[in-house]
Length: 355
Ligand code: SF4
Image (cartoon, rainbow, N blue to C red; front, top):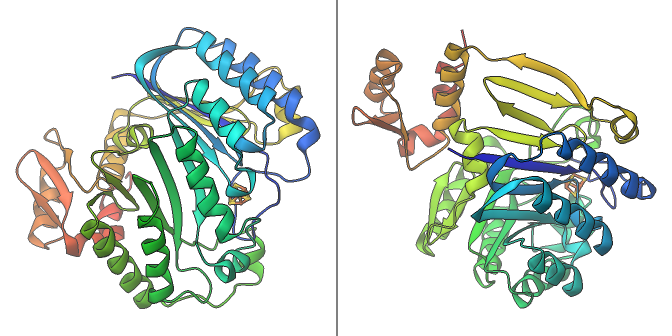
């Protein structure tokens, strides 16, 4: 079991109306100091072995090329990365640039995750995204031209005023592009966002479920495996980094607001950019996770993996009861949600809320 490394870049061109991630606009002048602070945090974990690296955000590709080069070179120098490391970087289509993508490729990045959300300009506008549909298509094609073979895109379900047909148009467009991984999350209205105070018209729960079924059907027909509730991969191109989160493997997070989990302790970092840069100790808190809590959590996350996970003899009574209700299938070793369980996944997850 090797570690995952997560690096958080909290800068964005503009803040999207639905976003509650730890990201900020209007702070680009802090990028150099932030990278210096990030590298110093990384250095205190020098030598860690890892086989996945994920630079997420925010928008990592708002970094200038020389800043990306400084950061990624430091990652290679600081950590002991396996030869077959999956090295992902997130990108917003508004920042797509051939030179930047080529640089990333030359620096050992082998997976690009592009935040498309929709190929319809009216839907992008409703989400206050800063890019157009044409930018999104261009970003994927530039990634391909720069030599990326692993290209993931995010699509969003249940966008204001979205219909099943318009969502399926987005899926169709995605399938015309050279992508081998698609994440498809529903819009969630989070407290503290402009959408929370002023919620736009959204599809009903029933419509949302229908949309999700239609997406699954369409992608599966096109040869994608629905391997996690919101994720689809072609020819085994599953996100190895995210699988670590879902299977309870250790990961080290660096940067403002980043989380880590190793040695049965969960850590979280200071979230403000200025505060993070200034602080000598970037950690905000550490929470010890008991063996029993960890096992509950392993099941909650494990049921997200639709190809199934090893139960290792835990919770036999709960598994039996859930099987009898037709929510999961369980062969004595591997458990997974059934189709009915996918629709009612929250009922299954609730069974494994730590007591
Ligand atoms: S680009 Fe992503 S991280 Fe940045 S504000 Fe929009 S949703 Fe949030």
